[in-house]
Length: 489
Ligand SMILES: NC(=O)c1ccc[n+]([C@@H]2O[C@H](COP(=O)([O-])OP(=O)(O)OC[C@H]3O[C@@H](n4cnc5c(N)ncnc54)[C@H](O)[C@@H]3O)[C@@H](O)[C@H]2O)c1
Ligand SMILES: N[C@@H](CC=O)C(=O)O
Image 1 (cartoon, protein in one colour):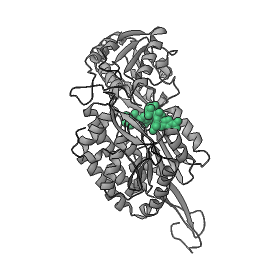
Image 2 (cartoon, helix red, strand yellow):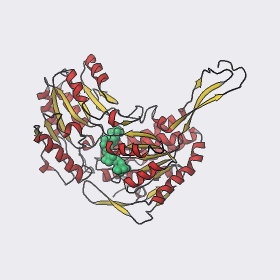
Image 3 (tube, protein in one colour):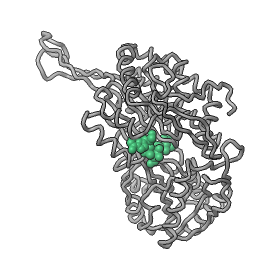
Image 4 (cartoon, protein in one colour):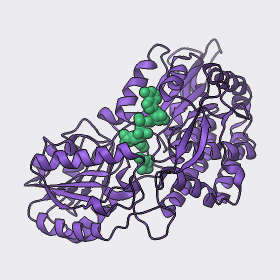
């Protein structure tokens, strides 16, 4: 692996400011999904070692919360600067472990770093309020305090940004964090730890624990000293963690699966809409919670839309993300390829038409060539499940009411897209959609200033924006009584 700074590639856990082996000697390999080669090994921590991370975070909490907000801001900004300065190495590590093309990986480093800068600043604005008193001679108000240790459990598809969007918010609020990254992509998390240390983040404030996922997560969820759990990943695991946090009544934030509808109105230029749909579907080889999973096109332009979509899709290049001019890297592992193939087979067996997608062209065993299916219907897996693969399904609809019903016909409610220039149609559909985020005539919708999150089974809470830091803050109300006459109270 060619890195300008090889010390960014760490094969240890990071607890209390120290690089840590698994005491039981257990470890596991991490693979490059593009080549199948072993990229490195990570330790599997024992129970006592995970508990030690909580001990360390507990000890660090006292000092970290006692810093002034502007002091925490300075350290987070130093971390941000280091992320930017090491962007190329961080992107290389990400492409090697996750597979996404280098330009996308560079983009994710920028994106991930932008949350650090955002929350560094937001930490200085955790204002309380003054409450006009209804109690004689009293002053009432609120102050915001850090909730305590936060456990952050993250997925493999965005191995860096899904950590920084949580960690920077928590740390800016004064909370130490314990990160449990996905075992497929631990090295981005460990590089973040190396840079946090260089940025002067004190020992115990940013910890990375590695181990058997169910074991480690259970320890963190059951530990009463851990006050908040923030999870990004599948709805299946999110439900499990929510249950596990019930006993200790933790603050729980969940960013779960999506199954985004992409609605195209009859007034749209079919080429413009089809190109946008391709962009919304194939980012990260379809392994994106925002991927346009159900493309719903008005029947009057359906045929032209399909032609343009197929033509644009045919131009996508598939290969090792380290090579230049690659649009789609591999899927994360062989099971993901098998799941994608099963989704396609299921749809075809139930009447969908395979317009394009020849798997014999795949450049390796973890690669899946983009697939276009038309005539996708409610009874198919592709309608209800995230394919998390480059499989696009298109369906024609007749009118606005029908498309609203189709779009909402899912347990998920993360993001939706609408393409039309008719303002009344936009307003009607946007208001009727049961989704946390709606992008109108835009594929891009995310970034630090926006409240990211879903409704229904797509999650609880919001990340980013002005409210993202609230996930890590408690509101303390105070009533100062017997003050004598308090003017203006
Ligand atoms: N809403 C969002 O912001 C967002 C962002 C990215 C990904 N996602 C979702 O993440 C999913 C893909 O990621 P994934 O495959 O890594 O998800 P996943 O749920 O399998 O894993 C996520 C994390 O949970 C851990 N985990 C797995 N099984 C566990 C168990 N039994 N107990 C405790 N922890 C366990 C994993 O090791 C990983 O760290 C998709 O559903 C995608 O939509 C959502
Ligand atoms: N693209 C999403 C991550 C979903 O997988 C984001 O921007 O957070």
